[in-house]
Length: 142
Image 1 (cartoon, rainbow, N blue to C red):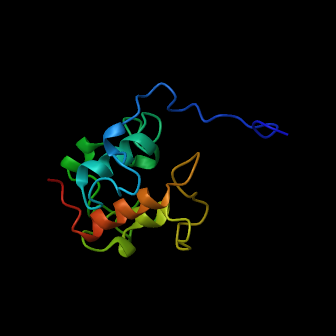
Image 2: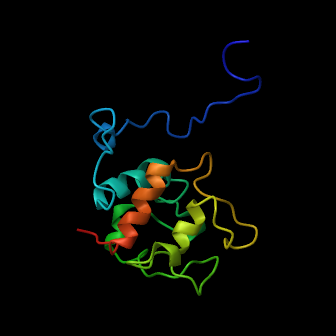
C-alpha cells in the first residue's frame, strides 16, 4: 500500500503562512543558526505557537508568545497561570522554566489536565534544544 494512512488529515492551521527559510540549515550537516539566537527562537514561537487563536493575539490561556509580549515583559519571569509558583521562563535555567515543561514530552510536572504543546505536533529535537539553549544563555531579548 502506498500513500497516506487511511483517515489521515493534514494540519492546515498554518497552510497559508509563508515558510521561514532563513532558519533552515544552508548545507547538509549544518546545524543552522546559533541555538541561543533570540531571532531563531522567536521564529519557532511564531511558526509553531503564536498563531492568532493560540498564543498570539487571541492569547490562549492568557499566554502571548509574540515578540511584542516579550518586549513588554509579559513572559520572562512571569508566573504560569496553570502553576503560579512556577515562572514561565527563568533566565539561565531552562529546567526551572514552566514553558520548557509544556513543550518537553519528557516533563512529568505539567499541571494536571494540561496538554503538551504545541497542539498538533511536538517540537522537533532541534527546536526544543534551541529554546532550552536560549533560556540557559539568559533568555536575552537583544
